[in-house]
Amino acid sequence: MDETHVADDGDDLVDAQGGVHPDVRVGFILMNHFTLVPVAGLVDSLRFAADKSFRSQQIYCQWDWMTCNDQPVTASCGMPILPTKPFNLDAHYDYIVVAGGLMSETRNPPEWLLDALRKVHAAGVRIVGLCSGSFVLGKAGLLDGRRCAIHFTIRDEFVERFPKATALMDKSYVDDGGIITCPGGTAIDLAASMIRRHCGEIRAQKGLAYLLADDTFEHIPDHGEKVEPHVYQNEIVRKAIAYMRENLSDSASLKEVAAYAGTNPRQLHRAFLSNTNDAPANYWRKLRLEQARKNLAETSMSVTTIAMKCGFSDASHFILWFRKQYGETPYAYRKRRHEVERLLETT
Image 1 (cartoon, rainbow, N blue to C red):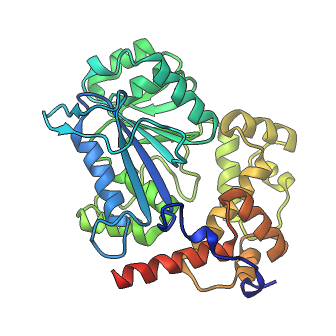
Image 2 (cartoon, rainbow, N blue to C red):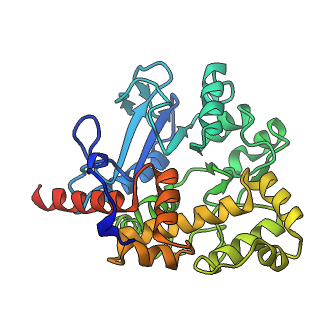
Image 3 (cartoon, rainbow, N blue to C red):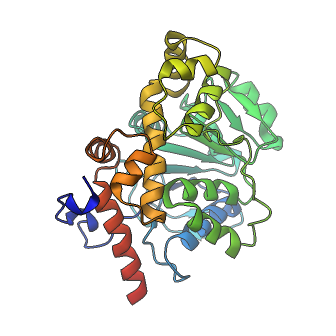
């Protein structure tokens, strides 16, 4: 089955307001007296990746500003910021960013906010703690048993308050199982990783080049070579993911994966469930689907060819899993990307 034979009515191309679906949506929760620089670095990177030129159109990437009481907040530098949306974490975001700053605002966040963050994490939404936003995530229990990037000025208090977390001071960000922490700075390398994951390498490099950061952040920290960017302490999982990435197109068995990681299939399964909350077979399939989506966006290969290159037995099998993962067929995804390109060319 080739892509020309896939039936699709094109309804997935537009949302309820008639706009093109973005590749990534980010909801910012701005705590009062948040630090402006990391928020600005993150959102400006998204802005440059969001359209074809530099017109600041929210097409590939979209974002909203929210506050805990739907009222304006003031950055730590004194700049007032208005929310653009009422507080709502159920609005189909790919990331929720908790932007902290002065410790007085993040040491004791409201319990309803902690409950809301736990809920979206359970639903599979990635959560980012910027600057002292890590204290909010720690208070919600989302950093227990995880590694996290902490600014050296607040490290001692963080360790005292959250002894179940592993605090690191030499990382610009850490992504551990969908809980991401960034100690501050410009947050441009974190932004590049997010854009690369959802929009592809070209869009990630566009923002880096424009912000004059393409050389500075050439190597994303704490990822290792061709290893899943989540930071897993388990050596079995780390080796298994490296093998999976190297063998996306092969029909290798999980027994072979386990052997490469120095274990057996039963122990491999347990290690993956404990560290990734997913079975190794499901995790491997998601890696293949991520690569397939990248190929759809950046190449002209047919759906059948992409399916085979990414380890699926046939196009039908690939289309089924792609739709389950992303909510649209490979054909609809590619068509939507082309629709975005045409829209940008005419604006």
